[in-house]
Image (cartoon, rainbow, N blue to C red; front, side, top):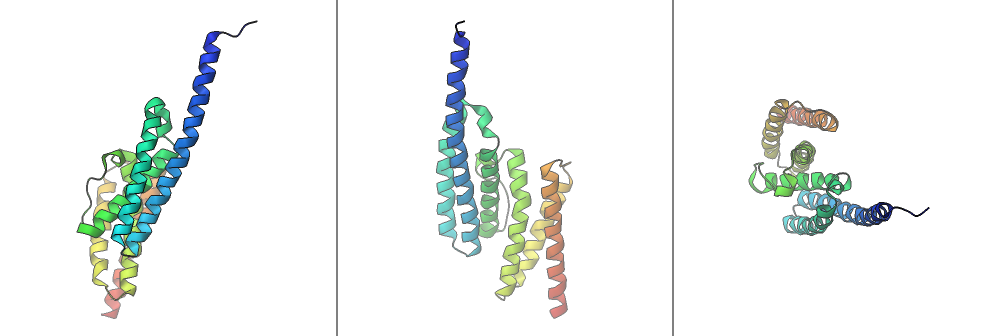
Length: 189
């Protein structure tokens, strides 16, 4: 019996998608790594180095998006995880540069990416506050606390479920950690 032509068409499309999927995963994983490296650079107060890492991540996202146009389902998985890390890095950069949090690169503004990045960014703010205490700059803790508290107040207005609920619970723990640091600092005064 002869194979129907639809089989050949499906087979070609499947192989093409598989090849592009591997490329998207590889590029997205590298973009995620660059975003993590940017966060670490920001903690070391190397803002220019962090920005360069984010530019590198951005270039990789552009490459991924070429493939995603052909196969939109490739937007899930590794690409989305990388975008969430990218959102976290951009939000942390904003916090460090102007003390505020707002809109970021439009590709990372998709609700779950932004909210996941926002929750995770609270952990970076805690780390930043702790580093500043050890460097003799305890005044940074108060602003960190106010920012994380504002994020938690916002997140309380949303009925987060699934993995975002877990991230929200971690963000609440980050607020508790900052409360403890403020308490400890008040005892030293």
